[in-house]
Image (cartoon, rainbow, N blue to C red; front, side, top):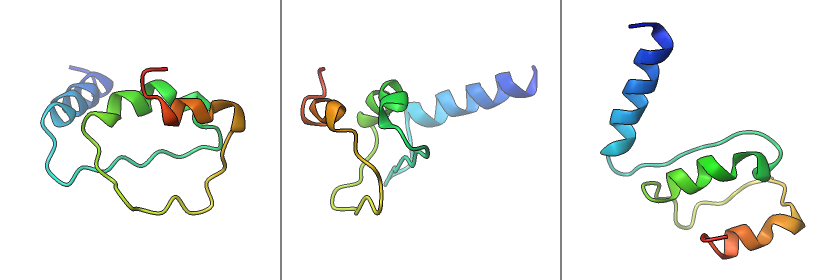
Length: 70
């Protein structure tokens, strides 16, 4: 099995039943580029009350945070 395939299999297995607490940290300046990843992680990640630091917001994407179904 190639390296990338092994890494993807490992991530799939770990994300299916992660150790707790589970926290996902994503980098980059635009949240809209990561919406699909964020939605996938929302079912497992736990980060209540953790400050977002100097993260930038995109006003036209705020509805995505308010309504996970959008």
